[in-house]
Image 1 (cartoon, rainbow, N blue to C red):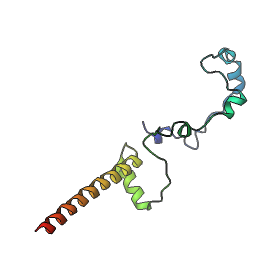
Image 2 (image 1 turned 60 degrees about the horizontal axis):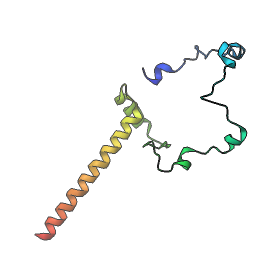
Image 3 (image 1 turned 180 degrees about the vertical axis):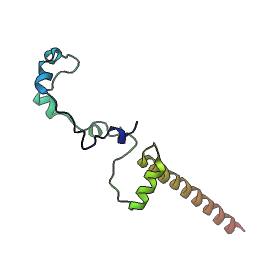
Image 4 (image 1 turned 45 degrees about the horizontal axis):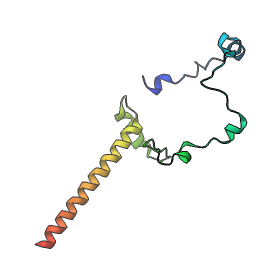
Length: 116
């Protein structure tokens, strides 16, 4: 199942939630000691995770990038069941690795030409 399968079509608008029925449910008034409500003072002290743990990283950063429509459509078509953004990331990673190999090869050739 992918995100496309989860999107609602225009004719399938999200059902309205009957909050009165939710509040009237037996568990609505049950005490939840594992998740107590925050006080205003506690909420005011909350900080973003990266401010508290600067070394914490998810390994990826959200960015905005402009790509040619043709490039984007080609990657979406190639991606199949996977995400096209993952495919773009893999392509960029392979490009970086290829650049590193090319630079190393150039360095070896320079050293050989210089010693000859």
